Image 1 (cartoon, one colour):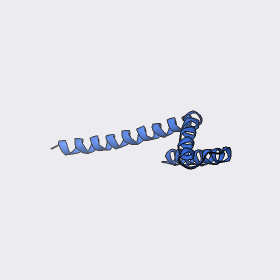
Image 2: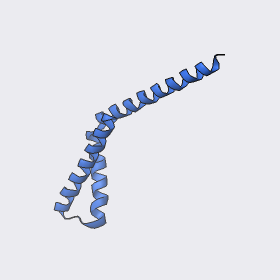
Image 3: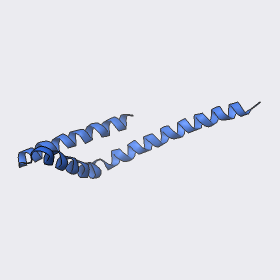
Image 4: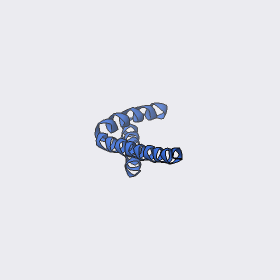
Length: 80
């Protein structure tokens, strides 16, 4: 959960930083938002790759734990 929150906050910060820089460069309106989304996506893909990998590993371990608990419950129901 912590990795997901950190990743999301950093993505938002990159987006708003891109908006600020592009605004200073002269982009306005819809073009500003589209360019900021594209630029922040490219930067976050490169810069935040380690955090994204950590986040996906955390999600995978959470799913594995949940699956194990489901299997344990199923086994206890199967025993008569």
